[in-house]
Amino acid sequence: MKHLFLILVLLLLSNTVANAYCPTAEEFQAKSRYFQSKAISMMSSQSSDLNAAEALLDEQSRYLDSLFPNCMQYFRTVQKPDCRRLNVLTTSYYMLDKSKQPAAKNQIYNMLLSLPVSCESEIQATKIMIK
Image (cartoon, rainbow, N blue to C red; front, top):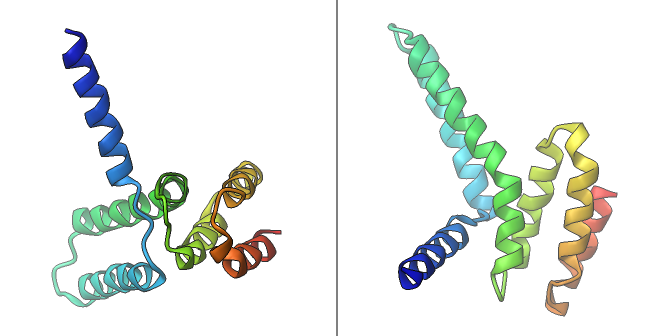
């Protein structure tokens, strides 16, 4: 029974790390273009499906809502993170509700302390942007 529990815990942890994906700026822009082109396509089609439009809005909201926590998890769990992804973390910070930004700022500052020295210029830019 202990072994089964341990296996389940390991699976949950590995799944959490696997889901902690912070996109590159290019991937984020591509996803934004995807949502935009899909919306334009829906608006230009003769049969406007309200359910499809709501589904697209829900998909976009889920994606944008997941950016900050996923990027934070990415930088906390990846041993050698791609420092350029801090741009997306900063963008996701600005998309947060204003009431959530102070706590998020503290999380970012604490996380920045653990990044490698090779990320110094990106760290400084992030600090300036969220100041």
